[in-house]
Image 1 (cartoon, one colour):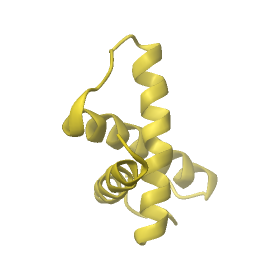
Image 2: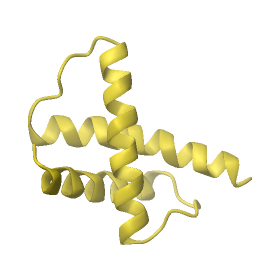
Image 3: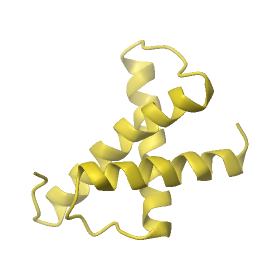
Image 4: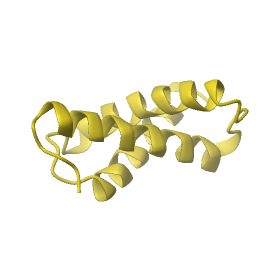
Length: 85
């Protein structure tokens, strides 16, 4: 997947994770992209370490990035003193 594809995945994963983990300071288009891309990295590392294999395709990459983005948002909430619900 090229750079633009990862930006789109990051935007979608960041926006979806914002619906699941509200009340973090990472809101808006650019923070959502950054959280989503960071989430894709975190999710990819976790998938590799848990031997889940290559996500393959758009939906698999989105799922891995979403799980990672939720974890990143939870960490952001903990560091800001806001606990996710």
